[in-house]
Image 1 (tube, rainbow, N blue to C red):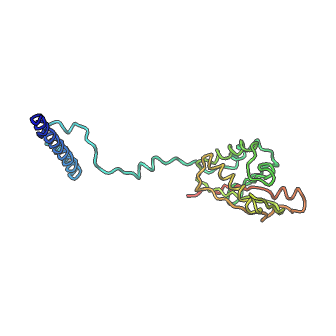
Image 2 (spheres, rainbow, N blue to C red):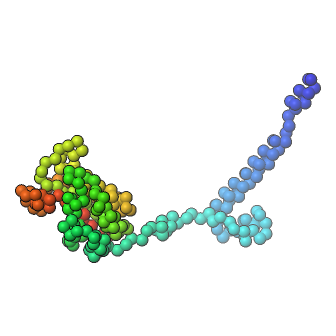
Image 3 (cartoon, rainbow, N blue to C red):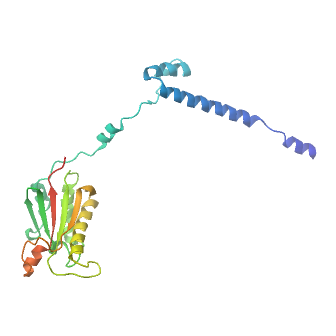
Length: 228
């Protein structure tokens, strides 16, 4: 019994030899990689030949020169489309009823007026389903343009006060924000879009008639001229 236990407790040095061989190989590998990185490129082939043997210059070796990341990033950039024209916008929105939308060319850019009664439910900020398809076409035509977009919401002067919208400021801003979010979901760059909640400011008609108030309830999309 004691003889068997003594035999089991005798150390076996085979694993030490294997570990020493592994450490030697790793040391040589990292030494070669370090030397390859610090020597001049024209001396690299001769160095590799001296370490590996004749004909090593024909072996594919990893180029240790730093990559020109700036060039690669520039190549990866998506090519921007030219500035959108009023004709392209009119084509995208050709199926809209004229009383629902108005498009005009201004000094700042192209201004698109959406009449809120056609695009939003009364007192709400959600976009109506029947107008989403046309807004999708408009958003698609604006994708990859290097142009800033300002979306402004307007209301009439009739006060609103509920849990969701304490005043016309919140309602007008929410309508503009929903249009902006819709555009971003369609692929427009968020950094190019700005929203404004204008409430009943800057009316285009008198608020003493229902027709005048309907004209004042609107969302304006200003597609500004291209930026450099």
